[in-house]
Amino acid sequence: MQEPAILDQVLRGLALNRTPGFHFPVHFLEVSFDEVTDGGAHLSIDPGPHCVDATGAIHRGALALQADLAMSAGIRAGLDPAQRLGTVSMTLHLTGVAARGRIEAHGWFEGMVAGAAGRQAQARFVLRDANTTVGFGGGSFMVLDPPPGVSLHPTPLRQRGHVRPPGLALDDLTADEQSIYGRARKALEAAGAAGAAGPVAADRTDTARCPPCSFIEAFWGPQIERSPKGATAVVDNAGHVGNRVGHMQGGLLLDFLATCADAALPAAPSWQLTASTVAFVSPGAGPRLHASSQVVHQGGLTAVVRTEVRRSDGRLVLDGVTHHSRSLTPYSEGRPPDR
Image (cartoon, rainbow, N blue to C red; front, side):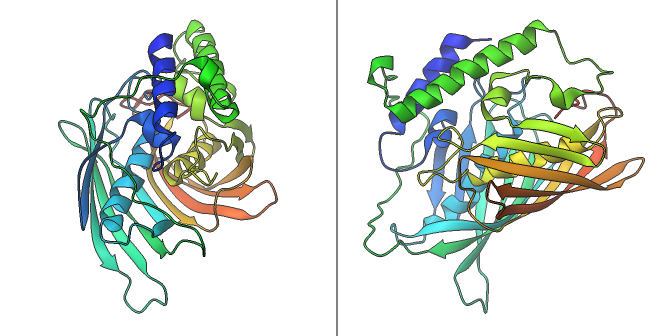
C-alpha cells in the first residue's frame, strides 16, 4: 500500500477542486481531456495505487465515470457554456479483459432525439487499453438550461502535462475537504487490514461481508449485505463521489448499482459483470443512497439481476438490469469473486 502517494493524490485533487469546473472525483482520478471537439472527445486515465482494485486493474467505477465524461464532453462542446447535461440512460458492456495501463475513452455525439419535446442528446463510447477494447456502450442526456438568476461558466478541461498544483497543507483544509481527507485515511486503514489478511480465497463464500482489498474499493465502496433473495447496499453520498451540487456522479452511481448486483449472486461459482443497462430517474441526492438487488435469472452460464437505487426518503434514483457470465476461474481475468 503506497500511503503517501495516495494521500498526496487526494490533496492534489482537493486543490484542483477549489477552481470552478469539474468535481473532486474527476480531479482525483486526473482525467486528461486529450481532445474535445464539437461531436467527439478523447479522454484518458493513467493507473496508480489510488484507482486500482485488488488485482491491479483500474476500478470499474473509474471506467464508468470516464465513459460518462467521454460521451458528455463531445455533446457539451456544441452547447452554450451555460448549459448543462442531465444523464437519462446509460449502458456499459465489459469485454472481461482486465483494464490495465493507460485507459483511453473515445466518445461520439450521435445527435438529438427527433420529435422529442426536450433536447435529448445521444452518444456512444469505447474504452480501450494499449492493446484491446475493455468496454463500450452508449447513453442519452437532457440538455438543461441554468436556473433563473444562475450564471454558469465554461468548464476548464485539463490535459496530461499541465502543471500539477501542489497539494494543500492539512492546516489549510476546509471542513468539507477535511471530511474527504479523513475518509481517505480510513480507507487506507481498511485496505491495509484487508491486505494483512492475505489474498482473496478461491473458496470464500461470504465475500460481500469481507473488507475491501484496495484503497479505492474502501474509498468508494458501499456496505453490502447478502440475503437469500439477493443483496442490499448503502453508500455514503459526499464530496468524494459527488458532483458540484451534491449529487452522486453518474458513472459512480452506475458502479454502485452494479456492485450490489454482483453481491446478489453466489460467490461460488464466481460470476463477472458483462453488461449494465440503467435508467436515471432522479438525482442521487441526500447523505446516503440505498440499493436493493434481486436475481431474476441464474442459469449455468449466465445470470440477470434487477437493481433499484433509492434515496433515504424512498424516492427512486436509478433502475437497472445487469447481465453476468459465469467465470472460468475465481479470479476471472483480473477481478476477485466479490467484484
